[in-house]
Figure 1: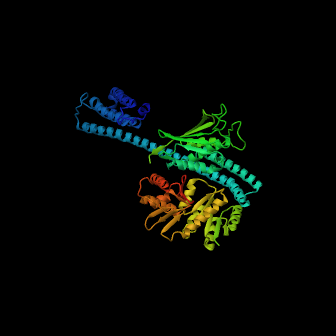
Figure 2 (figure 1 turned 45 degrees about the vertical axis):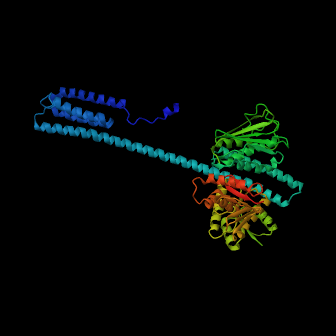
Figure 3 (figure 1 turned 180 degrees about the horizontal axis):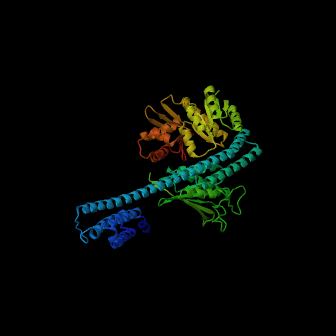
Length: 368
Length: 221
């Protein structure tokens, strides 16, 4: 595959880069040019002058270039000095003992200057790199802290809004329970309160889905438990729509977030009960193929109007013939939840009539 | 007359709960924040505490932890927060059960009954939960007087659930009681054994209900 090539590790030894080769040739060229110049000036300056010139170039080169070329320059200039300038000229032989000592000193000084200066520069560069990395790390840490802080603020705000909105609903509910059954006005308030509760919960859930604060908690799950958690909160709605569940008998344990899945499935189921006429069943077929769990929720309602499939899962979208009292968020939340779990949801009309919603989810499995 | 302590910062909620509880024969005291709640708990020695998690100042979880340092009074959590992590945290800090606001009064009272009942059931070698009886002395379980064939793990699991019959038990609490750190992936093993238990309890037995992300509850019939 292509991607494998791009992720290959770099070879351990790299070939000598071209700029280092360039430094070698420049170094040698400079030595020879200077040697020629000093040769011309030799009658006026004496042969010691050229040694100092060579030392100076080595030091200058050391401040810019890599160690290899600089040390090569040191060696070559020592040999050139010996060969051309130290009498007797044009031999490597040295006559006077003080010249031998001078040559030795030159050799040692040139080499150690080259070595020391390049090392100094490398250290400086390493230090600077280190410094940059530290700055980069600090900046990253700072960004992460900011992000965590804004996430925490967001959650605190959401918690507080959630508390403020749900508390009055809870108070109304408890007070209504105290009034007791049988009062038709109380029954109306209760219906409205339920509706309000659903709207508030949908808004809060949508905010949570959109803030990406939603992190699935995967654990082994029994699919029967997920469906139980799906249908229990909907027992009122499902009283008029018997749910027929097939395909769960042979399913193994599955690794998934049962709360998020139950919620997504619950929203789809609730949607089906809104549109299908009372008394018609809602069929839920569950299947598992190649580690993909699939739910098909089929209702016996009027089906989807032409061309609304692509808008169905948009926020606040409401189909033209929707009954009053929805927010257009239920299916958007379902899709957000499924996508947070790396799954997806789609809808189409069933060949036998009614709408069919398909929820797919990648899962890990283990047979019981 | 049983005494109930309500710790909630919403005055209206406290007033309503007081009315509900008094009509059920409770003597009620209330506190508007955690500090006061702890003082009331120490002073009145209530038989049950209704604790809101979202309190100003000291959080409900902290109140619970402080309370648990010296008291094992049954605590029912009332909270608008429905994230499972919060519930698990509260249960593992020593809460006996929770109800999410908005709640039905019937549900609230049922939960209150259940969490107070367990005070008196720990004395004998027998645990009963509806048609189910566990004999801890002989490690025998019977359902409607018919003996159940259970493995030792299944028995330990059923015992943990039956001891807390009607109450939620978190997954960690079950694993700690039944496996005590032996199994490599207790979550998977737990589900497998729950499955087996459900089959053995059948249709006539009490149901083991899962609450996603939290744990299990043995439902009384």
